[in-house]
Structures are given as structure tokens and as C-alpha cells.
Length: 249
Image 1 (cartoon, one colour):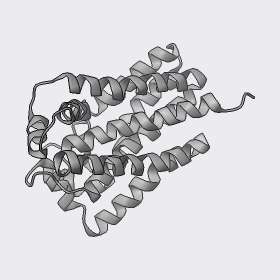
Image 2: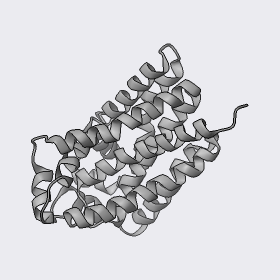
Image 3: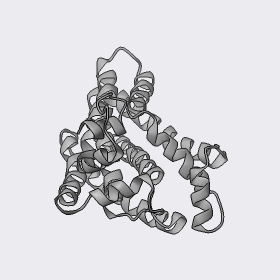
Image 4: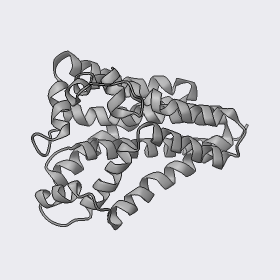
């Protein structure tokens, strides 16, 4: 667990831990979402900031708690998807450290709706917004885990290979149960929001598996991280839409 939290968060818990150590405990990845979502949830509940400011700080806290690691995946995948050509060519762009217009576009596409959805939730109810952020963080890690469980690495020897190999047998079974059930359990106080939370991670993971298979020939760490960030956006958008369409009391 220490290696897992050290790899996927800023928490300094994994001194001496290796990538293989993190991979062996990756079946518990959805639990990491509780840790990354908690600082933002607290900021939303404090209630001393206007909704838009609170939402901005809460989202920033969640991204920083994860070390902005998956944000880099959004940039890389956005650039790579804009490239025309064979999967091998897109994989080259995926590894390129330079940032292009595709990456910047993906950044806006993923995070602008996320921020405004969270602000709408905060305006309606800080408590609901806090729970929504926690559920979205758990769902994000659940989608990442499902990609690692069912995906095939685009390149053998990449960082995703360690996780795919480790998620076998009992770990695989536990990973699937946690990834499918935990987002909904966290979102139970949201009513129908729990149903949305149950659906989003498997849906986004399925879509990401299909797109990455065609575009890159398989998954990678960047693809998994980008899928998680997109999952957060989709769930928060769905939850904000639910409050807009709810009948007035």
C-alpha cells in the first residue's frame, strides 16, 4: 500500500519501494481516489469561498495530490491522437516531451467542463459537491484499474506492463470488484448519483480500450492516466446535469 500511494500520490510513503511493489498492490488503486479527493472535499465543505473559487481550489488540490501525474497523460494523449499515421508513429509522439496544440486542446476539453461542473455542484450544495468530487476521484482510479486489468500494453517493457502482469488471479478478481463497486458506494448519499457513478468508470474504460487499441496498438501509462482524468470529468458533468434537471422543491 505504501508503494501504491507513493507512486500515485505526493504522499512520501514509499521510500525504497519499486515500480514492481506498486504494481503488486495496484488492485487497490480505487482507494487512492479517497486520498486525492479528500483535500478538495474539505475545501468545498469549509464554505469560506464563493462556489467558483472553492471549486477551482478543490480541483487544484485533487490534481496536486496526484502530483499532476495524470495531467501529463492528458497532454501526451491529446498530442498523439492528433497525429495521422500508424500506431507506431502515434506511440513516438506519446513519448515526446514537447507539448503541441493537441495536448493543449485536450487539456481544455477535459478540465474546463470539470471545473464548471464542480462549481455548479458547489453552488447547489457544498456537501453534494464534496461527495461528488470524492466519488469522481474514486471513479477515475477505477477506470484506470479496469484498463490495466483488461488492456494489453502497446509496448512490452513499458511501465504499464508491470501492472498488467501483476493483476492476475485473486488480485484481478479483487480489482474488478473494487473498480466496479466502490464509486457507487461512495456516491450512495447522492441518490441517483450512485447509479451514475457505477456506470461511468466501466463505460469510459471500455471506450478508452477501444480507442487506444486502434490508435496505439494497446494501452500505456499515459492512456490509463488520461482515461482516469476523463472519467472524473464525465461523472462530474453527469452529476451537475442531474441537479439542473431535478424538479424544484
